[in-house]
Picture 1 (cartoon, rainbow, N blue to C red):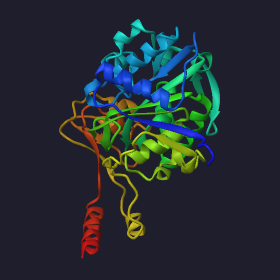
Picture 2 (picture 1 turned 120 degrees about the vertical axis):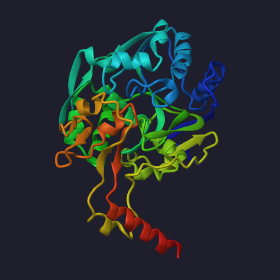
Picture 3 (picture 1 turned 135 degrees about the vertical axis):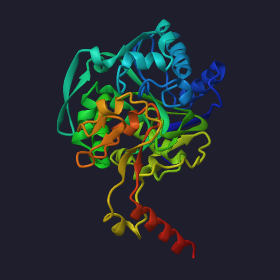
Picture 4 (picture 1 turned 90 degrees about the horizontal axis):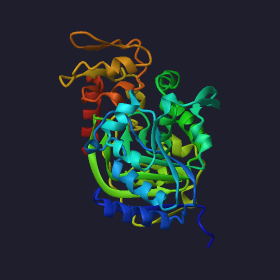
Length: 363
């Protein structure tokens, strides 16, 4: 029997206790036969979506990074920890609890770095020169659902390599799931992280990746050398058909090529609401008005949604308003809202159609 091309490790880790995380990371690296060389220049790319405290399970937990840094320091590595968040990355990194990690390496917002343009999905996109100056990139994502791309794992996490407002502009150019996912896949092929780790001790289910999702305790650290192979297995763990996720589909990696080391549970994450309609009723559903961006009483008028909307569809008055004629349903506003104040409101006709369908099925 021929050896599998890709190895993905699944290790149980039930808390962010330093000792337990250290043990899980060491076992993960052993499982995929990953060994660090001496004196490497290393960039760690966490998931720092925005200014969210670690307890909210939206950002990579700092203890994962701390224990990873300790392993790297044993090999005399020069460490950089960098990302670009939805806004004010420096503050977001601090809020996520990363400040104390400066004793291990340099913490860098990508916005201020020199950049080189790359052609990605027929767009000229600047990426930090640091990505090519380091010897190895370690991509440390979270186990989360995503209201647009279904899941946000290793490949989606690399979108943070793109700085500032350009991320919103790209959502405007690629508002649909398939084209946006093509962008992500090509970006991953350029960045080429050599080690990918998913922090699944806690994550997000439902309408993730931000505050509109719900915290899901999964007690796992999932690791692999190839980000696409890792995402295929991680999405299976979440209860998805992995090839329903476009970034997995675009990889051309066959599931049979992947060897899983460790026990793979099916955690049946609650899926985002924008999942595909049942094929029986899809023709009818497609004729119904699309769900609209709506706001609830949690709104604090922080104006982050207004700032991040790529088509300027949101205005903050006495209460937030969305110009639905302008809205492209990229869902950036839902992703960045810190207060769980924005949601998609289905049309009454669609809700009634679902009820009728459910009654027919249960008859």
